[in-house]
Every structure is written in structure tokens, then in C-alpha cells.
Amino acid sequence: KKRAPMPEDILARKGGEPLVSLTAYTTPMAQIMDPHVDFVLVGDSVGMVLHGLASTVEVTMEMMILHGKAVARGLSSAMMVIDMPFGSYEESPQQAFRNAAILMKETGAGAVKLEGGVGMAETIRFLVARGIPVMAHVGLTPQSINTLGGYKVQGRGDAGDALMRDAQAVADAGAFSVVLEKVPEGLANRVTAQVAIPTIGIGASAGCDGQILVVDDMLGLFTAFKAKFVKRFATLGEDADAAIAEYARAVKAREFPGPEHVFGDAAPEARK
Ligand code: KIV
Ligand code: NA
Image (cartoon, rainbow, N blue to C red; front, side, top):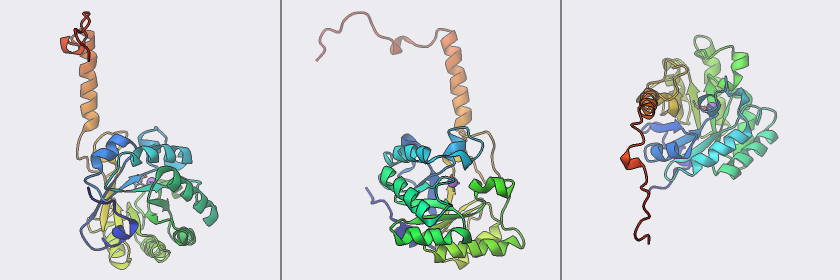
């Protein structure tokens, strides 16, 4: 059994073999991905993917802690990173530290992730100086959906310079890696070439230092919508639909339960 990587190990993978990561929210899914990924993100996407929320803005510390604990029980060789939910870190570095410490103590996560670039650099520096490894997240930052005005591609044209400054700022502040979400391929490649920490792409570029996807998206389990950057590697949602339809048919036809699923009336002879 290999030792779970530390943030330092992730940092050292800059420019090397691509880092593999996925989100997870439950113990069994964490167990399935554990041997295949370098780190698992307990993403605040849990709010939309498992709880039916319209955005990640409504996700709470309690939800993150509950799902973080579940994921931790399923991991032995992958590192766990946990998202700081909207409202738990933006106010001040002190607020961020207090809540990041709670997330790490309660769940055992080895690092936190938060959204923001230049504007969060001071907070990232504050956390890292006090023992909290931080993964940053720039480009499309879904917690800011209400000011961004939609899940649009970020950093096109003139906005590219600002995005580059965001990525540079979080690297300078001590983040051990940075998620680039929904940014043009060329810009993602330039950021990857210029910043010293691993870039983790989602809707970015195969040239990033690693990739992440929402597991329910890539398995075809979450089908309310599909972003262009999602590749469905399986169709588990369709499989579940077909299985449940077949169950319903079998129940109505009294084909299920079958003889192998029911219990005899006679007492067993010897029950040791
Ligand atoms: O919450 C999430 O799933 C994320 C990833 C998409 C990076 O932040
Ligand atoms: Na997130």
C-alpha cells in the first residue's frame, strides 16, 4: 500500500507525469477511485450533484464536514483536499483559518481548496504560514456565479492578463497547486508554463499539470446538464434507469423475488 501523497509531493509533480484527480462525496466512490488518483477533492459541487441545489452558494460547512468524513473513510493511498464553502473564508484571513482548521480537524483532509486569485492571496499566505496547505481555484469560480453572471469561459482576450495575475498571485502566496476552470486552452498552457505550481485543469487544457472532473459527471450519473468539458467515460445514469425499470417490471410480474431470494419455513437443523 502506497503512502498518501502530501501537498509537497503534489507540488513536486510540476511538469511531470500528469496528476490525476476526481471529486468524491461518499465512502464507496472514494474507495473505487483511491488506487487510481493522486488526490480526491471533496468538492462543494456536492451541493448540486447530490443535494439538488441550484448552485454551490448554498453549500454549508456542515455538508462539507459530513461528506468529508465519508470520503476519508474510503481513502488509503490518495490525498484528500476539501473545498471551503461559500461564506466560510472570504471575510478575513482569520475567518478562513478558523473554518479551514475545523474542516481539517473534523475530516482529516490534508489540504483545503478555496476560490479566488489576487483577492485571496493574503488569505492563502495567512493559512499556509499557519500550517494549512491551500489549493487555489481561478478562472470560472462557481461560488461567484451571482456576480459572474453565468458559467462562461473566463480569461478570453484582454481578461487573460488578469487571469495570469491571479494564478501568479496564488503561487506567490504559497498555494501548492491551482485549479484552472473553464479557461481557453492557449491561456491554460501559458499559465502552466509561467507559474511554478501545478495547474489542475477542468475545461482548460491537456497541457495542464493535472486534470480533475466531477466524478458523477464523468460516470454519466449526473445528467441534469453536461458541460462541454465533461467527457462521459461511462453511462451509469442510463444503466440505473434501465435497471430500475426492469426491477419495476419484475415486481409487477411477481418474478422478483425469485426462489433464491426467499427463506424456507423449516427451522435449520443445526445452526452453529
Ligand atoms: O467542487 C468541485 O467539484 C470543484 C472542481 C470542479 C474543481 O471545485
Ligand atoms: Na468547488
